[in-house]
Length: 52
Image (cartoon, rainbow, N blue to C red; front, side, top):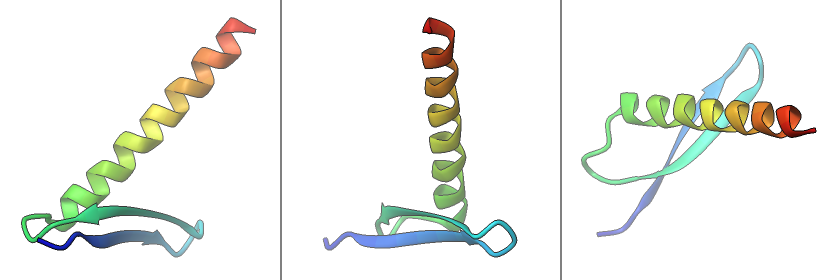
């Protein structure tokens, strides 16, 4: 099965998120992936600033 790209865009802040999707992917899956990635990046930044 061919993987496709799913994208979420925010018009107000002009941010976007892209991920691979399959036939079983729902829009909430893309949004949840975006939120998970934001949390991962924010936690990484907190860890780096804590170490310095």
